[in-house]
Length: 384
Image (tube, rainbow, N blue to C red; front, top):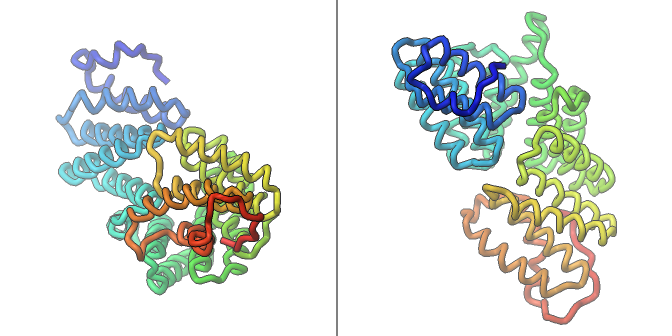
């Protein structure tokens, strides 16, 4: 990587195009190497130079916009990420850079799915169409785009559409396997097994969901190489094990998620808070109340420290804390947290409240009318 002092980034008038090209490559290398501040600084310098004299310079400028958006996401600024990607997408469209357009759409779709944005399905459909134009319907890229669309369809509770999309993607995988024209990467096999697991989860087929989850994990044993893919598979499998009341298995999978997050998601306090919340619930169901309390307190601190708190995760933490408090006999704390959470739940349309939140809230429904400031006996609670 080029060694450069911060002052040099501001002297853009002195940079000829080769220097700007090297700077754009530096941004990419810094991002790949985990030096997020340097990557963002270099990317901004390329953007600010505004060199538009050739198709190649415009491509470099667009690539730097992409790096800037990803760097913003890595440091937890979701609003800035979405704004940068919107600018990058328009830039790609206005300057006819289809490869950049596809990559920006892929990033936007991924973030929209992560935060359950209403536009996730529309973005996934646009991404899949762009992928088909560039790479064809029989490509691995098309398979991956199909899986994102299936997830968006699941968010819309359109199970038949999701199953149809996954079946089409699975057919491409089978055709590639049969023809042996390409090696299918482990992460692709993991993604499709994991997405099938998500479908089974939504259909209430929890044993099949867990089996698909463990199949997904079997492809990505090397967490250093496949951390993010292993995280998704482990998390979704843990949710299935909870439904099966396999508490030790759920706890072990959540610990795997925590191990991955410590390496690959160090700056994402929302994700870390959600893992701790899940662990607290698993401890509670194993009657380890002291661990449940200390762990939910950690989750609360992590969630409160996030630069851009995610409302769904904050609500999950508060509701889990309320359930634990009720089991501890702390009815006043449980009641207050439930009332606070109810205000937050109003931000969702009634038919779009995430299932996990709805189930946590339902555990407290029978308690609302009977709560007093006196401490009741410890309660037995239902499975989420």
